[in-house]
Amino acid sequence: DAGVTQSPTHLIKTRGQHVTLRCSPISGHKSVSWYQQVLGQGPQFIFQYYEKEERGRGNFPDRFSARQFPNYSSELNVNALLLGDSALYLCASSLAIEQYFGPGTRLTVT
Amino acid sequence: GIQVEQSPPDLILQEGANSTLRCNFSDSVNNLQWFHQNPWGQLINLFYIPSGTKQNGRLSATTVATERYSLLYISSSQTTDSGVYFCAVERQSGYSTLTFGKGTMLLVSP
Image (cartoon, rainbow over all chains, first blue to last red):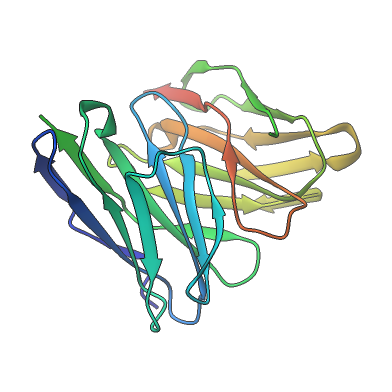
């Protein structure tokens, strides 16, 4: 069975630009969560979606938004990129409680 | 929010040695997971263990929920065990939002 997939793998953007990251959950998983991991730290929770509804939001500015589609895939959007948004963005899916992570998208903002 | 503390922050071992990693958390949880992050950033699920003891090969884990800590044991360590080990917990909120510790960086030398 395929695990969680994310695209793109790597991305380089300029300050002020917009970025869209994509995630496909494990088949049958209806919950998708997004995390940001900066160098040297543990991942930090950004959003959680279940059945296309936002169920939780972490302490991130409104420049960060997300959505979930009818097939349970998800997009994370970040507007007006800042240098500090450079990080590994991880997507996780879950069927019940245990979460499974994708390989991540490494975003570099220059 | 819930606090997660991992110790030690860094650990250097020779191949074949045993080690114990600790995770303390500040509130009741309904989810506790241990992950190994490989050099490419992928978070690999090791254990889903909100309470009790589990074993998988050379790895085992114990969570004492009443005392709010979990231990990850690595026996007969191998160089491939190197990487960062994260403990992550979810409060009894009903939502899949993991709070991560800062991790333990393990280096196993030949």
